[in-house]
Length: 466
Ligand code: OOG
Ligand code: NI
Image (cartoon, rainbow, N blue to C red; front, side, top):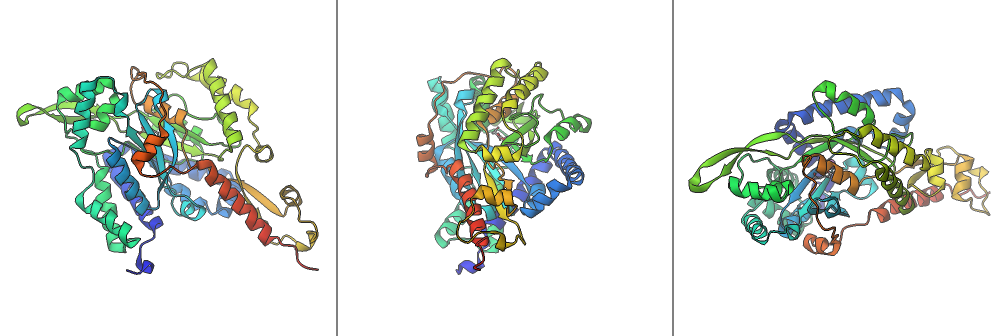
């Protein structure tokens, strides 16, 4: 087949994101409420700030926002992770970053599958935070073995999905009919199953080891556990949630409220308690419940350089040394105060953030700027071009995740006694071996975007020969 007849990976990703959202809406109705709330707040925010609207339009990122979301799943075996990597590649999603959650008492390590490159991100930035269970962190050898056997016996992909992934790999793409079929088949992997594949006894033992282990091992597949729309004002949505019947977690994860948003702020509502049945002896089913699926919203800010990130990590640690947020929210006000205090040390205007090399920016030549103002002999420095008004800059959006925030989101859904301890043991090499490729480096990606934008400015602003 000729590649001209292939459906673009961006289109496949877009349909998959839409299909996933429609499915989750029917499975978890509160997600639908949250979508409406976020859309309303985004409209209000844009109406109140024509400047923000203008910049989003200029950078061609306005359209993507209402469509934007991330999801999260947790898989049980290296083979499942490797096949997922292949499935996501057909949708133009690649593993970026390594997140070690063992440090935060959650027995998984993770990456985020997402599009890379400006164009793909503009079309549809759908991302999936994907965690692999660390069975090696279960102390009880017999239980570990039972979990391993249970996982080895399941197949989370349909036969058709696997065939289509292989077909796409062999041919270099899929035509429209196959692309639509792939979306439908892959969706099956993320569907909720209310019949567990384990007995109530095994479920309870897995649950006692860690709730997350029970969630990963006990079901037919890695149900999508949340979908997160992007809001332009997370404080506003957080405040409005209770009036819409949704109780958010007490503290927004990430940096405090700021003029210039950095990285990522997230909040979630608690997982639902859902009726499930367990496969007990002699083919009888036992009724029970399971809590796994929740809702989350996020606000994205500028991507930080390693220097900016180090400052962020230091200030966050500083605030958490003063007050560690309790899972029940009892010290929320004190934590928020400590956070705001600590982050006074992080500059809060775009130009200072830029000049101090704390964040990544996209530079754009100003249309109609008189070329004659530029000297042909001495190419102006970037700073001069900015100061002259020949070039404007916009923050590059952070497309990734934050391990401390992710741990907070996990913990808020594990109940107050969920904070078991595990030996911190980051294991990126092992994760990559399971994945079948190295994860991409997020900093290199943002730096590449910034550099490419500077090169474009230089090309466009060649001084005219006199
Ligand atoms: C993933 C939690 C991490 C985020 O937004 O940081 C995450 C999970 O609960 O499986 O989605
Ligand atoms: Ni999330």
